[in-house]
Image (cartoon, rainbow, N blue to C red; front, side, top):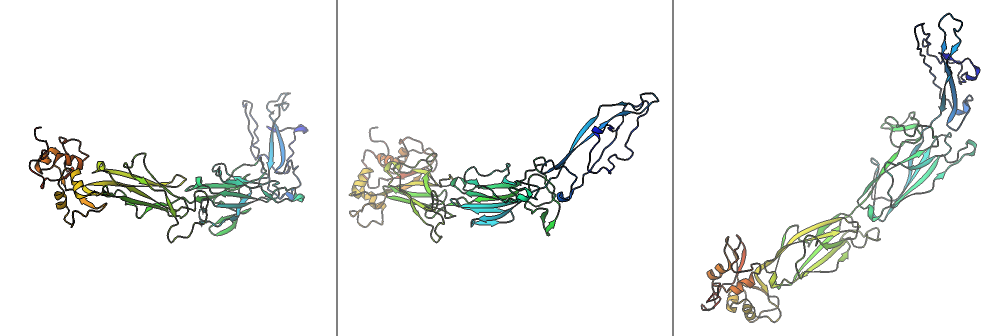
Length: 495
């Protein structure tokens, strides 16, 4: 195996005095051998372009393309054909590339941010604010056009983010049209970004299209100047592995989300709020955003927990958080209502006596972030708020009992004839039933009118219904009622 002797195939390499054949690798096959092999090696030197005059410069980074052709020659046997039998030439093409690796750095940030950390790096901003990053890419003069864009693996937000036009530096003497280059990335945080953290990686890419796209430096930092890299000991000169793209510069943008809390006088989670029949009941729910930024609203969670009949909810009242500075930005969804309150109003009816119902409310923002608060509304038995023009006598008659009985149950009442509107009256005593007792049994035991017991305990449908253990029953004992009343003891006489 040897070089082609035909001059058309003589290899034209820049260093003709080099030994391209590895010593001892030229093989001469014996008479019984049908195969032979040889090794060809060539390592072009890396030289400054201005000092190198041996390349043809077939492009800005393709220095030249060389062709090497080889043929196999039969040198065995003492025949007239010895040395005359050759294979067709086999040619290889060797492009010689000069590849450089651009670098990129963050040259400016246009925004006062909430918080910043170089270690990550991380910028925190608020909704309805914006931030601009200016990146600078640089390569040596072999690169004519340098581009800056985001890495496809992470991308940029589809809403609010925009690349500005590149700012190019040109040099006609070196045929450079855009190197170095600066480019601004603008991001405006919208409501949809609230609470999100986005990772963005930016890179500079040169026009050396035949060079490897990505080749990572060993132990190199993400940001580095040309031909240097950062280390713990400072800036140290170090060769950079060549590639078409720079090491990416990655950073994070944190858009602060709401920090929602229910505050006083909102009832604590899972507590029981007690009211009474006919009494005006009001309950204020209040919530705030700990960041003092997002507009809030409070809504009942009616999908799972319906409010009792008759409960009304006031319109929201907005205010600034006490002692907190005013919001820095006022826009759609932010700045005008970081603290909100709503009031529940209710006057439970007699039919709701003993009601024990869970109510839940959400505090939310327009971005869908919510916080829930649940509590129990309970209408206590055996207590009643008098209505307009209602007397102790008319109240007693409505429950089939005697007004003297009611007066006796309200020891703090000095004048039974001077009952005021919404005065809280004790109707009787609450009794904890035993398992399987009935209202009929209790009526006979306490000499109570069964009609009054059914009115005072609307959660029991019939005097014959079996009660569960510790079922609370309002008892209106018939102490002051005539013994011959037809409804004492449960069943009327003759039934």
